[in-house]
Image (cartoon, rainbow, N blue to C red; front, side, top):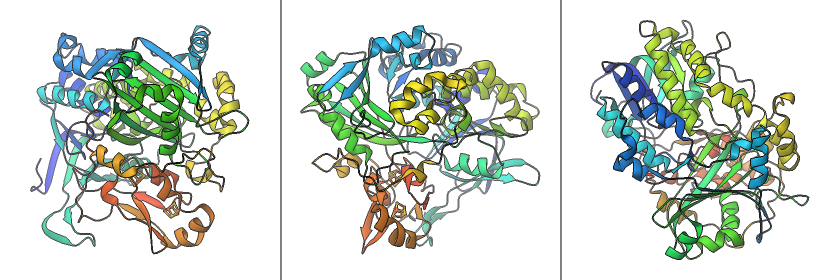
Length: 556
Ligand code: SF4
Ligand code: SF4
């Protein structure tokens, strides 16, 4: 496939070179070395758009790699990517900026009682960087003969509603100027046809959402999102030794929610030992926050200032940073064909975060992303001569792989917390499936004029954050962030909420220019999609920029 041919075809096209898409490619090539498998990804290089905590449950990775390379555990790549096994696993409840209570015993008790909360035990899991994991899986896929093409951004899916069939995808035009006029280097985005298409773009993917809408896939519940902001901090020998290799900390409470006085948001902080004197520090916040002046980076700052966290990172240097959304709605928010129950339709399959396979009781989705990739590969082998049955076979393979059963254990968790708030919702969620199915409004509708009371005194430095995310786009390309109606910004949003996009965008993309909020710095965009889901008037659309634009994560 090249940019100068007008039409190309492959038997299997995977959109998105993340853990789900690459696992599908690896499993498929292993099962059928003759299969023609092409993976396209909008990032400039392997792993550049992949960010996660990350703590990875090992079984799915073992299942994927054992048949491919039985001695993979001894390889230098594995030792580098899978930083260490979790040896010290703490869950803290933070009260104010000084007190921390370790509630890990409660989590173990919950596990013993079979409660969903007990899934938060991470002992024995791998600590890893998902950017490095992805780059490694990319090498393995290529070694098996998979064609992995970076810098290829997909903007549309060729779905025919009359016949219910999908023939391919269209890549983004390259070389337009800001007014969409062709420049000397203009290359129209080519059409790529395929017998089967796997959509594995990650959370809130443009192609996935277009397909869900056009193919009329159904979600039983609204998808809910959170955004994670994360920094990789190099600390001193003494600090790192005190924190310890193999140590992971998950923290709830302050500064996201506190009893009685608030605030009352869902989320929490993380600290993971990443080796080489590096600690990953992050904050994940549910997008259903109500504070119009809230920025998750403010919560990250407060978290870093907490006495416990500060003792390990004070004086450290932020060497990398980034932001990404997480699909939190669980099983009821997974899109399905209403006729067949398939997670996809006909010859189109939705994988990993594109489907929403994140278990919020575990705070994990990576293992399900890998499992869904392997399930998709098995489905394709099974329906080799009948690609239009692939999605149905995939639904059954997901069941057999245990993905659906696991997701069922956390089925109502996030909706319960959204309905009752973290203080009442977290304990209530132990009732799981016995609770009624709550209808939760989309995240963008939850904004109020309330203010976040714990704003740090110093403004978060978004410029440095963006610089270490190494994000870049061609300055002359059309702006990929569309404000649908600019009068809403001025007449409704500014007077009522003060233009929250300017505050919450982690990359400082939005600014007020002559009193008009605008995406003034689109080249800073981290592709987190928060603005598309949190603008209180649902007035922003994130479209795909030219291939190779965006962050260049190395160890996120
Ligand atoms: Fe408000 Fe959305 Fe306009 Fe930003 S884009 S000012 S959040 S309406
Ligand atoms: Fe995220 Fe939107 Fe800001 Fe880009 S512009 S970094 S997608 S919030």
